[in-house]
Length: 477
Image 1: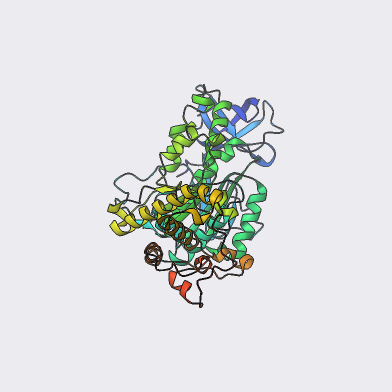
Image 2 (image 1 turned 90 degrees about the vertical axis):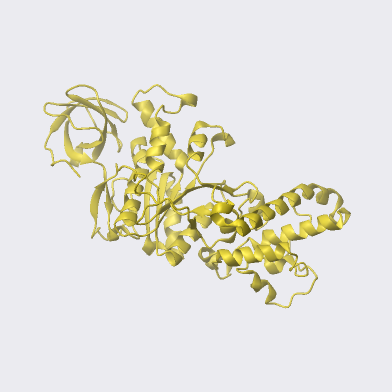
């Protein structure tokens, strides 16, 4: 809780960009305290270091234009706070908890500090549970952990936002859960588009959005993740609901920390990153946990600098993830959505002890079939399908039918595609894959498996053996 509102007033002694030094005559404020100054107290400074018995150094969370030496600074008596409560649902916030969607004034909310400790090991649930998304490709090949963290890797235009939107839709519909979208270093265009997409998809009433935009100072971008987690912890601990936390982009959190560290004059570590990177990332990631009251399940978009997976930012992030979902531009260009690359994606939950022997063996067989098809693609492109052995032709047929069965119509794209969205249970997804691998559908055209829900939908129309025009040509790489 806050310290008793302090009327302690200090004086600015130096301003260097976002770094402000303030001298106090009386007791100096503790680290993480919020100070206000400037016209109408609009400039907000967070204390990061105590330089001496009477001087503190802070990082401004707002632009510092107009600040000068000798200006008065007021200690607010507490840290940065985020609003929590039922009243924050369907709203969009900035790092200070101000609603930025031009909606009604906030009601039924309370303020809580964004600096909270992760739940202790004693409070955490020790069960490994699967978080079912209703999306075939994810549930079968990359099962997510309830209360775990999954990384989402992919470039522009391969369907990251659509996949996140669909997960939000399914979370609301099937888990009675809450979704929180946290944009760290987002472009304002992306935030606006996402808000309208969510509104049109009808998922906004059980959703909260919070943004630290790209043009905001690094201190603001660095704290927006903490504010989002404070909101998520309220729904998990007080309302006992499951929370889906979407973070875009976790690399920009590390980047903001690096900027702050440089401003504070710390000696940089490997490749110029801050020496405290591991601690800062752990402080954020460890708060995402599964407790007796509920779970915060997180999906985080991860930018990998220069595609170098040995970069310290990528290495530290990977150590926290329980699943990696890789989106492929090649699959997206073939119209195979969601464009999840089955061979690059992986999950620590995909073990016989957690998902069961049948699921594990099926997933391995699917990957093996798709990998064989990948190896045969060059031969098909050069010599044609007819030159393959009959066994290899069967492998290609199975792989192509699996690829099409693992596509799925989404609820959030109904207005664009005209195809009704579907969620598919894990049981139906596994049954479908198993029946394709047993060649039950070898006499059905590939197109009958494209964009369907459960496998039985492929049998509804009368389908002759002849491949129809909608099936992609066999030599497509």
